[in-house]
Image (cartoon, rainbow, N blue to C red; front, side):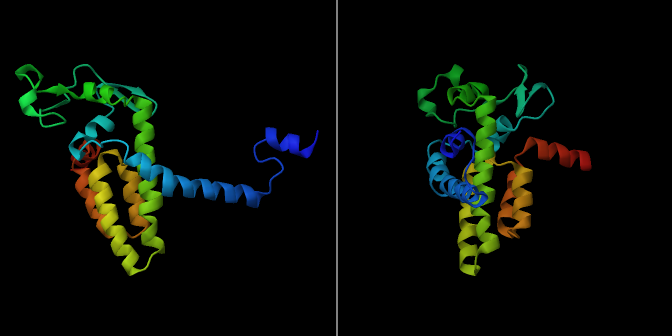
Amino acid sequence: VSQSFQSSLVPGGGKSKTTRRTNVLLANQYLLNQALPVWLESFRPLPWEQRRVLWPRNTGGTSVPGGTIPSDDDDLTLDDSYGSSPSLLSKQSKTKDIREIIEDQELDIETRSETCFLVTYYFTQNLLEAFTNGEEEDIKTAETESIAFIQKYGAYLQLHTSLSSAAAANAAIPIKELLKLAKCDPTHREAMRDIK
């Protein structure tokens, strides 16, 4: 079997470790600098207050890989201020079931899980990176960008991963913003009640 035939069938076969490492770094750089920024702008993120939809608690639902399915008796609803003009809504449709909104946006459990992972990955690997490698001017820019990102996409961030990455990067300002976000996280609020 020739080397060229074998390398096309076996991942990385025939390539040096350095070449493979370089390819992974280039792919990661493309993902962080080109693909994810475009993808992030392709959807309208949910506000912080709707974090419970993306991060449901394990109580009252059925556990599945990557999250839970809320039980039928959940009262997760939104008022008419979300997504539509109140003048266009009839009295009966002023409250829309949040699960319907999720279904409309096609956020099934797998998509929801992957979306949250990618948003967190972008935040921890791209935005927080400037805190460890940057100079003071770069850090000021990174603080502004991080706060704006948390305010826009905070509902999707894996809170504990983001907090630990921000702490490792000594990113004090983003940590403060993440702690504000934590107040909207049902799992965090429940843990805080248990601690008290």
